[in-house]
Length: 546
Image (cartoon, rainbow, N blue to C red):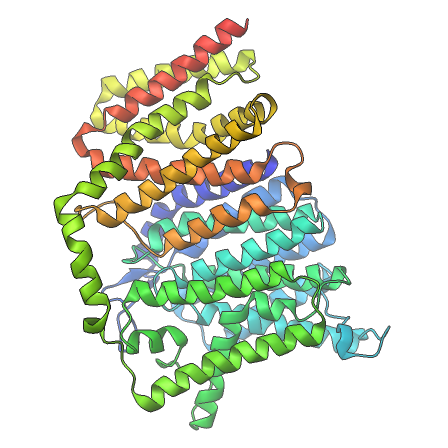
């Protein structure tokens, strides 16, 4: 339950704090102004990093053991965020920014014990780097990767999505080694990113700023280095692949600038995402393309964690050569995607389905009636009860009734709050009993209902005629990636309660709620009734159990 609680707290805290961080950013003039190399066309608050830092670090401070690594991580993160916020407000000069990054890296090394001492097969067997070589190398890698993630923050949702994929990979590898501290940190950071992406998917309402992007890169490289250095069967090259896209993008851009006779630190429009848009991809398509490439790198690592160091390095060099070579070919030939030959005709064929509304009637019907029925099943299926459930149910019903008296707006907010709060615990309790009392065939059918619901939700989002509200975005790919990966985590993580499936089902229902709220519009009374029924059922179950 600790990991689920960590995820919920990091998401909720980030979401709750984001509007306040936005107001503070506007007051402090921490805004990103439009420019020739910027994608956005209006002033954009650079405040997400502040809320993300609080959302991520709170569960770490509460539950992570205060070993040297945790202390080094927290102190180094504090330095990174403080310098990042200062840069978001006043645009610090490069030397000052670099000084803050080096200071944070030093804290991680000296306090947290983060050091690259073992280079695996690249040194003779048994040779360990002495501190005079290991410490400068580690600081260089930490600062470089921190900046790489910072420089990848060029499109709405791009840096956050890449970071989320990286932390999923780190969390997976950590779970395999039963390193629960790293799993907790990965979940906390991942939760804060999910909360932030709610505001940052295209078109973005705000940016994470340097405070957020540097925070993600800093924590990711600390976890990657320590994980691979502490486990002999993990290659020291693994961090290079885990942070594959940001590192390759940064190296390519800087080398290109040097070859052209320019400073490697002068901003331009030669990043991978700029090139994808220049090829004719839309904003969201460019983001999704980079997501897919980064996800492929993560899958490659988690599927082959024990590969030889030289094979890992060769694989990455082949990948880098193929990707950079492809962009170079496009640049030489001037290739541009012709939408008239494929995409436009495809959309034309799909348009009648959307206009007639036949498919969406079926898909939304499944969501509309499937969600309440699924929640009701989760509630009515026999689960362990206690007296506190009765008090909680009665109190919740009272608050809903009070919100109903206060008006429709208050009721809507109260309903959403209880839906999101109760769902993970309902699924958790139900799954415990399902796996104890149902046959394998029935369990498979039960899990299949969530998959059907997910497909219906995605089809509804894609075919809806709504112009406002919750719609399809590259974030969908990240959610699907999480849903597919989490249930396949090492068995040791879920020996007691299969938390991965609980998390995946929770995410599916969260998506379903957003689609229901958006599609039902004025008919949103269905959701309050559903929640009231769930809470009342809980109360009845407790009374019956007594």
